[in-house]
Image (cartoon, rainbow, N blue to C red; front, side, top):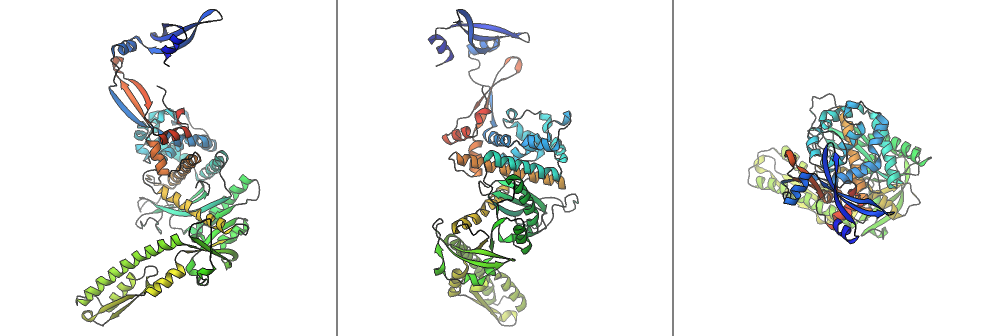
Length: 571
């Protein structure tokens, strides 16, 4: 029922009244009714200026002169989580206030940088242009001049490493409290990120050349360790370190901080399980876990324990909670401790390793066939020693020498010949002995076999977080346009915070019955846009009408889940 229909149906009296505002009359449709026997205005609706009413009556505003589309859904949903965490207040509470001419608080700038990392990562130089393409002005009231890239840099200058640690502690505690995160079991993992910092730059010692996990050995690296929850893959602790340091050397720093944080949150000795892979194994690291009375679930390289690999498959028992997984339990002394060991065989992993080895063998045999054909044509140029070195390099890939044998005959290049054979029996023995197997270790004697396996598999959540940070499109560590230690650490901080925001968004959607990846979630939210209709106005100034674009059923669910109506335009 329209407004006028209500007036007619209720038999109210309607009239047009004017109000003078700043010397100019504006008109309203006023509805009168008797209240306690006296006439009173009970409802009114704004009509506009005389020019607006005249234009509407003449049909001049039937169509807008132009339109604009602004990003809304993804940014608003991310900002909703940022507000629930109280990010701005926490940061400002640590670093204090700023001068009135600073444009905005440090917390506001870091929150804006975090939101940008979540939905559309760009440089601070491009930030103002990106912000203008969004409906962000309804989320944060900030002058356009305050979005200059140098203002962001000024805010980043304020934060020192001690501030970042304290801020992360408070935000993590807030996330646990507000979102009810289960922190009884956490996964720890480390990686590194390639940067484009010049080799001659001596202001960024945190960026060093090392073993690049992105295979960019020509670039300087920044190492990053994360501790995340099994409940949603939420990062609660991060540690940035020089990229030339082995991961295992950073384990102690992260465990010391993790133990202290968890002790503060739990109010006493922490009952906490840390999950990590074999890359963190060392006797001092396990001694540290024991000293802090932290439980653990880890793994050992199967090839380092041939006696365990020789246990026959008939000794393994099915694990009903997992498809095509069998397990065998024993005890094992390693790394200075006696562990409960769970040997597992996954047929899915077995098949994947078999397919990968097929590809490795195919590559090796192609290279050997080319060498053999060249020698058979008498076209050899290299000496026997150099050919042997080349063949050895071809066969150095994992497990190749266990199933492939070769023989190089002759002494001088024209007489050299190469023969090689694949041993199917050796291949079958390799698969039976090694493929699909893992050796898990833990100090949990109260956990079932399935719980140990599930605990270790939560390590994949940390790996997923790193893959997400290496996604160049959303929730990304790159691009990183910073070249000093302090700015790199701040950039790393808000990149990890962006990962927390994105995973909390995914967890919130999951709890609402919407199972989406981070990229899928952000794509659906990005489809919720704001349309601005610009109509010709008086004196050359256009009049704007705003509305949200049509939504699919899924988008409507997300709109409601994140309460986006709070920021949606009303006119």
